[in-house]
Image: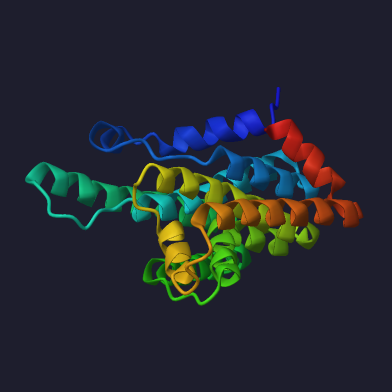
Amino acid sequence: MYRGFADIKEQLYKKLRHPYFIKYIEEPVVDEKKIAFLYSVLKSANLHKEQIEHYAVTIMLVQIALDTHEKVSNKEETDEFHKRRQLTVLAGDYYSGLYYYLLSMNHDITLIRALADGIKEINEQKIMLYQQTYETIEEMLKSVGMIESALLQKTCDHFQVPHVKSAIMNMLAIDRLQTEYQIYMKKESSPVFAAIQKILSYDGEMKVENVYNELIRKMRSQVNTLMQNNTGIETFLSTLKEAT
């Protein structure tokens, strides 16, 4: 029996469990909310269950490869840490290779190109985030939204489900902002809040916490407006609710 979202997660975890990597490095972090979004997009495109599973697993491998490469540290290392670092790089390359292999088997050249564009956009926005080149909070927030949603947006374009793109970008930006806020509150390094603090340094009267609360309020309001004004979003939202 096909269990939809549960089957997709099971197939993805099977692909990720390389015995050598599991022995020496942490298991990759899988963003299950992004799997749910991806599943909902593909189901909204009226694909067959085999296609949904194939594309969801494959596209998530790209996301996990990007996330794995981002975990690589440049700190001074012991021999053991150096080995872990090299294996983390190899693991990211391994997941990327799996993605290319699975798509090439189906001759999905157009999708490979679309996702390659998404990867390029994500990497460009990550550079901007870490270099803190923003002049406004809005510019920074748009960049964070692109980092979190570019692969999903390219998937929406490819499978002709463009009406959910803005909602996805806003919802994932909210998630990332909330995660980064928790990191910031623990006094740990957060590139997002480092960028916010740099922008706010030009206006000493504004507090980080106040800005955070206002951003969350505005983005939630935007999502609600998108949902109310977009009559074609119901299938996506009902599938998302089912998956989460």
